[in-house]
Length: 147
Image (cartoon, rainbow, N blue to C red; front, side, top):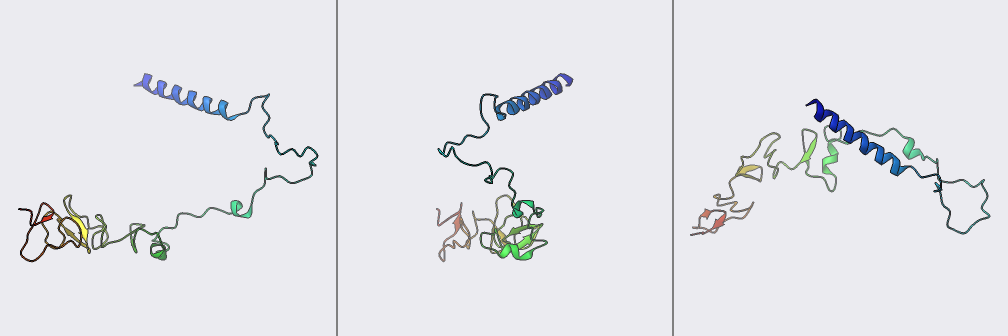
């Protein structure tokens, strides 16, 4: 076990060494190359090296979670309008929060309209949500009128 730990540490040390050596320029390789043809450029012009904007100097905010900002879940591109355990979900279709937060559907079930249903045998949700079978036909193996 001790030999394995030493081997792993040696591999990590070698990887860090290779990364650092490949990231630093050699002595004959210049750090900045100007290929724009303007040889008479003065040294007084400001460059973007070392420039920091106000945006970058601001303190980073924490992630916008729905427990602090409930309206995040109503934004375009959100996973759903409801907030469960700091995540935006749709309780009408989410397997882990079906109908309400924390209610999980079984392995063979899916969440349709906030209820856990078995799509292999449910007439109203045969094979998929809202795929109802015609009157008089049964849902078997996720298909209407299979036999």
